[in-house]
Amino acid sequence: MKDIYQGIIGALKLIISFDRNIIEIVLLSLYVSFMSTAISSLIGIFLALLITIEDFKFKKRLISIINTLMSIPPVVAGLIVYILFSRNGPLGYIGILFTPKAMIVAQVIIIVPIITGTAINIINTKGSYILDELYNLNADRKSRYILIFKELRQNILSTVFLGFSRAISEVGAVMLVGGNIEHKTRVMTTYIVLQTSMGNFDRAIAIGIILLIVSFMVNLIISKLNRES
Image (cartoon, rainbow, N blue to C red):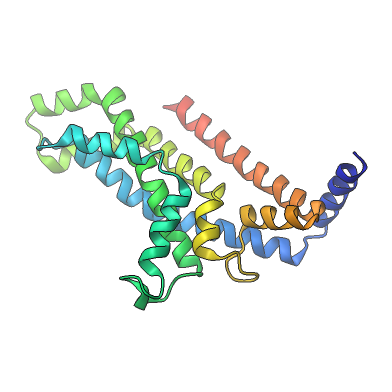
């Protein structure tokens, strides 16, 4: 109990003093998560609109695959990226393994199905009547995409924040492809694992508090968007 108390006090001191190492790790975590979420949002939202608006063969099967990938184990996603970008891998010549770029790629693989699957569900449940009206009015393809996105933008935007919350809390994949290298690929989640294993509970708790605050803020935004919609 004494160790926990001392750890919390030490953590608060580190946060209040704006420890340089802590700030560096937090900023890198936010950068990787923001980039992966931005890329995933562009891909995921477009795919969701395409799948729900267009009619094509194997549509239901594709949705089933996306729903399955929503629960892909992060370590598996990391393994895929590791194999692809390792020295002997097919994309090894790019040389991004153990860099933030590889971590972003791994997070994109994890987040895209989440954003796509959630957005598809939103459009199918809340936008079905809009689609019916657009078909009845013989609206052109471009108008369908624009109007569906415009009418459901707040709900769709909530999927973006959902993806970000998934990215910021990821540990397995980013540790595998990033290597948890100091001043290079060490992010909040991997730092917590490292410091806990070393017994530095004050530093682990400090990052844990910051991570909880970020997650809480993201969840507040998601709740606000859902209420307003």
